Image (tube, rainbow, N blue to C red; front, top):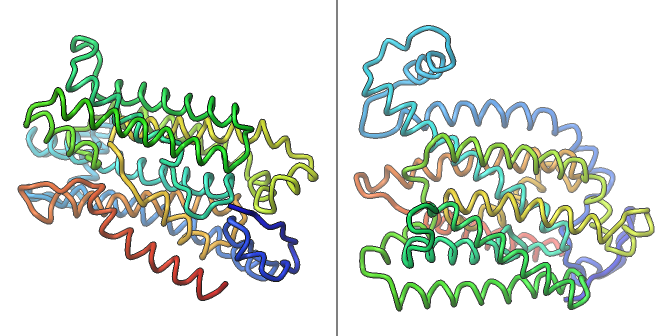
Length: 369
């Protein structure tokens, strides 16, 4: 896949067709995006808070937004909720951690997608391009089906270890092959195929029907049964990775013009790539270990956010994270209620929504190129 160098003021004719990076906004769109940044951040935060509060009320038990507010205040030490223990438990122990983890997963996957697309100069890159999802799937299957760890290792822990092993393999392969962006992507594809084959082999040779069904549901993405420990862990990893990515925002802007241009601007290309790849891989591993593989969030949301803010990463990264959080909160709400009492895997719903949206993105890119 070839890449074309660009200039900030006037791109070389045909550069967009040859390049693989997302379109770089000119001075006009950048100023427009900068003016929209603060309103978008403020509106996104308010929309996210409202979405979480409303989503928690949706379900078989009749719960209102004031009930949610009073329960949260009570558990934070501000008085008593006045609700029965059952209703309190439904809000605080069941729906609230699930909704918050959906927000964290949506924000994290969208953030990773934005960084991967800019770092690899590939608009089709997503958080799973490094084979992390396939490695996590293999780790989870090994724990659940083969019983590795003798019950002392949980499914999430096995998935996390598998994700890290897959990423380590990608780093080793890409470094051995030269370390270019193309080699990173190809190494990720190789790792993805390897661990997918291992997962299929273990399931087909060792799993019974019940185990196969449970593993398949998790592989498609599921937020059922999550608790506060997953929320705290994933939120902490997301916060650290967001700070790292924001600290490298200007560097990501430089990568939009190619590695040579970034190096000419004083960017340590190799070190920056390793730092950001490790950060996104760690965040993806944590999210996949808690919720399974949820596709299309990191692929589609960055394009939508980029259309609103322009390509400057200092304003793009927070907006993308907020958009991903709001999106997945409502997708999870739809997944758990539309066929109640049966639940749809979250990854199935994101694919049903994401495929048409991605086709629209491709059509729009084609029509403007």
